[in-house]
Amino acid sequence: MVELMKLLPAIEIETKDNPDTSIIWLHGLGADGNDFAPIIPELRLPESMAVRFIFPHAPQIPVTVNEGYVMPAWYDILEMEIDRKVDTEGLLASANEINGFIENELERGIDSRRIIVIGFSQGGAVAYQVALSHAKPLGGLLAMSCYFATSASIQLNEANKDLSLEIHHGTYDPVVPESLGKNAAEQLKNHGYIVNFRSYPMEHGVCPQQIEDISKWLQQLL
Image (cartoon, rainbow, N blue to C red):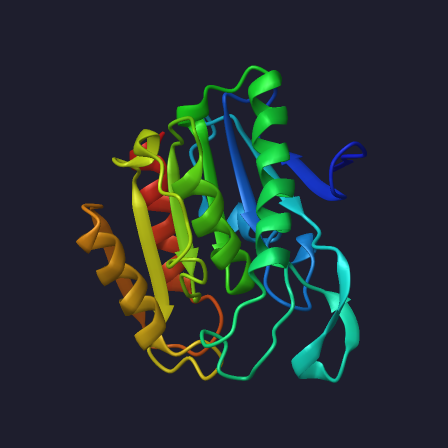
C-alpha cells in the first residue's frame, strides 16, 4: 500500500506491476478508504489483470444530521430525507477532488477508457457527478446503494454517453431506499443511457452475489 500525498489521502493497491487500469473506489459516510480495500481478493480477478485500485479518504467535516459531529464525509447531510436538500457545493468540491485522481492516472499513462469509478452510498453520489460530467470517455461507473444527488444540476458530457453503467441496491436498504436507486436508473435511461440495475436481498451494504457480479462486470470491461 502506498499513501498518495499530493491529492486527498488515499490507499493504493496494485494487483500487478505496471497496471494498465485504474479503479477509483469511494466509500460511504463515516467510513474511509480502508472500507473497501479488503474486497480486492474477494473479486478473484484473473492474475493477468494489472489493476491499480485507489481508495481515497473523504475529508473530515461536521455532519448536520449527526448533530454536527465531525466524521469522514464527501459532503454534508442536511436532512434525514437525503434526497430533499443536497449539499451540492460540498458534493461538487469532492467531485473536483476525485477528478484530480483521474487526471493523475492519465498523467501516469492510464488510458481514460480504462479508468473506472465506483462509489458506495455518499461515494456513489459523488461518482455519478464525476463520471457523467467528465470530459474524457471513462471505462465504467458503478453506483452502489446510493442516489443521483445532482441529477437536476449536472452537466452531462457527451464523452460518457456510452459509459458502461451499473447501479446496485439492496431491497431492504433502510438508509438509502431502493426507490432512489431505481429513480436514478430511470432518469438516466430517459437521458439515453444504457443502465444495468441490479437489486439484492440485503440492507445498506455489500453481499457475496454482488461481489461476484462486480467481478464479472470488471472482467467484461477490461
